[in-house]
Image 1 (cartoon, rainbow, N blue to C red):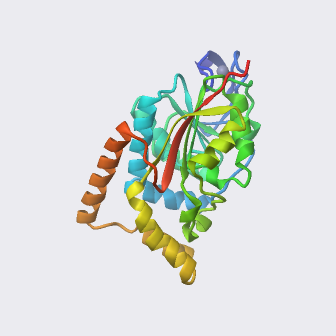
Image 2: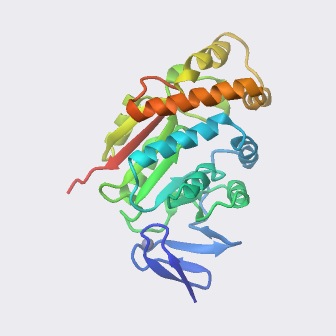
Image 3: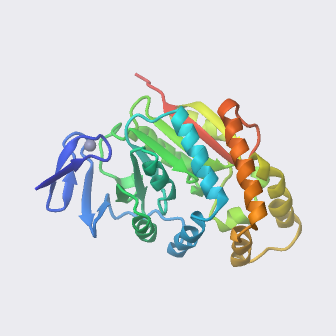
Length: 294
Ligand SMILES: [Zn+2]
């Protein structure tokens, strides 16, 4: 017989015949092919192949790299106490980065392909499943994160309501989302987005389910104008591009000089974020805390 620390409440519990059941919070997981599974539910927005496309891009893209660094900066400022569940964390790009930075991050993701990619990336603490049918007592999960997840929901309030049930009072929820509907373009359609958010719409959604904002800022401010010109205008004025052509253009490698410039701008923006919130950007990062209603 073996035992391990519960991914939700940290209590040490037994593993019996490949089944983990936490004595404290009832979290139940079964081991299949060395991966913990919460259930067999499927809530998958991407094609399995899309996860592979992203997997190829993530390690070389300044966008993913900078988003990780911005997330880390915010986590350092508004530190989670206890485990942090990276919900719908895909190939585990953020989870892995946070684990390496010393945060107890848990990846929870329904896609088999994404889970395999996360394993290749050597992400630890992976749960295959979704929050919808996970077996765990309310208020057991210490902190949650939705990094570019909410925009994939037709009804994001269902996800927020579920997280609100699972977090204890003062539990934190870290969010990144694509910002401003003004920036809506074909990339959003091809990325299975339903929405882009601003501070107001995100706050409205979160406040309605017992969360208060403790921090928020836009980032990728320097991409706002280029995105308007290069993505939004062609989308509004010209004909549609094929998905593959569009993504190829988006992910194509910039030359060394452009890379260096972008890297420097990202660094400056992150420095600015230490002192102030940015009023504009193509992404929004926010930290919410569950309000104690007792
Ligand atoms: Zn537990």
